[in-house]
Length: 171
Image 1 (cartoon, helix red, strand yellow):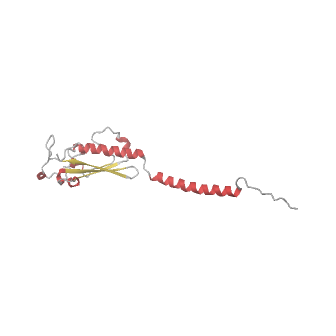
Image 2 (tube, one colour):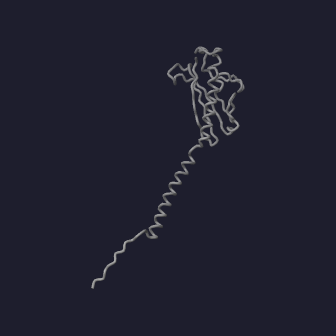
Image 3 (cartoon, helix red, strand yellow):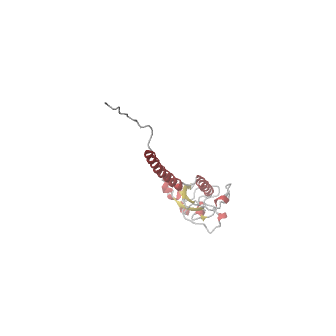
């Protein structure tokens, strides 16, 4: 006599399969979280970036509002090349007496100190500002003495540096 064979089908997962699945998912999540954490640690704080941008813009506004050179006529006008408008000189002035773009060359301030500002600088005590001014008309395709490049570097509290530049024309 034939004995009937019972075919049993497995429904669900075994305990071993469940444990292996949990281990594999755990390893994958650990790798994912590790990558996310390192990415977050390397990203800058958006508030610091915004403050650096506002500070840089405030310095550029202050500097570009000044005369091109000490020789610039009152009311504006071009300084002739014969008067050496590319000669760097701060004339030994105090910060409050800066009256032309060249006076800002080599300025380093920590904390930042603008002459006039609507910014609350009390929150920016850990920032530092470095400024250089150079004749750079050739960057713009004109004679060198007809433009000066103002380069501003802002050092954020974490040590990162953000830079911006602008040109002031001799006209």
